Image (tube, rainbow, N blue to C red; front, side, top):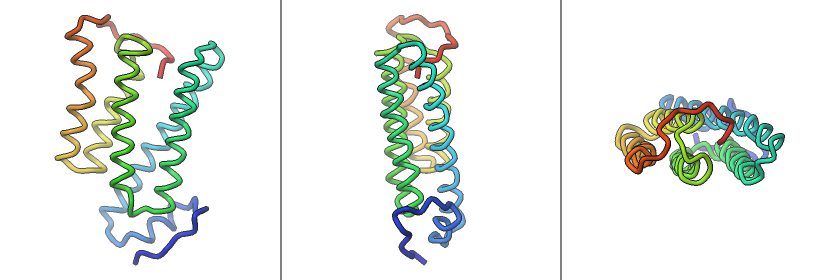
Length: 161
């Protein structure tokens, strides 16, 4: 049933119609939900960082917003590529977690913990247990390394992405 969708397709219903497997459809729905919520979170952070003059984080938020928009667009255009897109999403999540801890906030904050949870859940739900375990490990290594290196171990509620 792999019919070609138009490039400008923004319909989830049409994208799901190209996948005969209901399990693959569920994974596509989950991935799109994660991407859209991530995009929403990035847009909120973009507002906070712009208002507070945190220009490096504003640039990073813009890059993340473009990435998440592209992931959503490609997912709705070529739903069969959700596995590749899920790996891209997981790797970008690990980069955000690592840069948050070691470059921007130098601590473990609420946004970092949220990204770790999204990485773990997203890895298991979109890629299965083998990749879920791999990305869960890779996502928690920066936190463990931060604790081991003796960075500030407090959990802060900040608007840092």
